Image 1 (cartoon, rainbow, N blue to C red):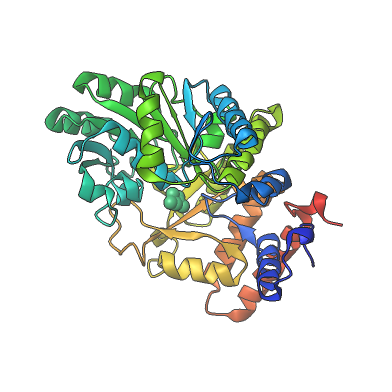
Image 2 (cartoon, rainbow, N blue to C red):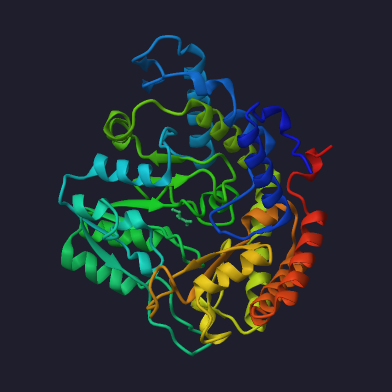
Length: 428
Ligand code: DSN
């Protein structure tokens, strides 16, 4: 099958062939990676546009290159749409990624060596929240909070953000910045208690909403903008835009945030991506986007329940966002996240292995698997189909030693993907 975007494909046979193969992969297998989505053709058209040719170091009205009259309008449009979407004072749409955005925030608000209180990677945080593997841990002093211990009480299963721990650490270490936000955490994150703790110790508050930016834009999760000094995020996850980052902040931080992104972190902005971000921000402001984000959460709840019925344990006992974090050990003590991801790949189900709180296995092996519903909700799957996907996952993993089982699941996955092609409406 060829893609409807063939017109964009180059005259380079090798690249064209790889693009066609990836088109096939994305539309004939299930995409359950919680940080991925299917951007609209309009977003992809802007990403592949003529704006890729333009150098525009600086900001609208203050560029270091000529010929930026139109680019200035593009970037201003993106900034206006973004501030309106979240009700923020100021937007910077230039970060190339979420990691760049986070580091720019630290650079803007802190001096080298200052203390930051953030969620530990193996408890659900992000590399840039001070992981020893990230440069952030070398430039700033991180203190890490985590989740409450797991409990067998079904009414209070634990593994949720431990606000007593956050407050105790904040009082003990007096951080200059507190970071809220996570990458492997299936519960709603309320910005209010973070603000209270930040105020109590005189810290600034950053909300890293990379994963949930779309859920916030759609009104399915609380908006951190009224609470946080700065909100940083990626534009390609639940927000369903092009790959990239963005920062929102209070007016008092605007100049320092802008200077930290350029020239502090980056050179020329990717104006083609900024045009695509503008397209995505407009899409996210439509009423249909709220319907979409509500469905994402409903799908996660149904998916999680069906996975639990198959014997997987949901970390924190449930989900309130676009992801389910699974502990595989209740399903099969010997099954690692790495093996599960590889088996599911063979069955046409794309996931990622993930550490879970207090995981006895390494980050490369893991006891957990993270699955998300944002992309396949875009493709049109609803609760019923996600329940079927849970069954298919369990069948593939139980029958992993038997190739005929994998082949049978792969065939059913193919059927689902034919019925729910995210770009079906655009295919000739
Ligand atoms: N935030 C990571 C993820 O959640 O997949 C990527 O950096």
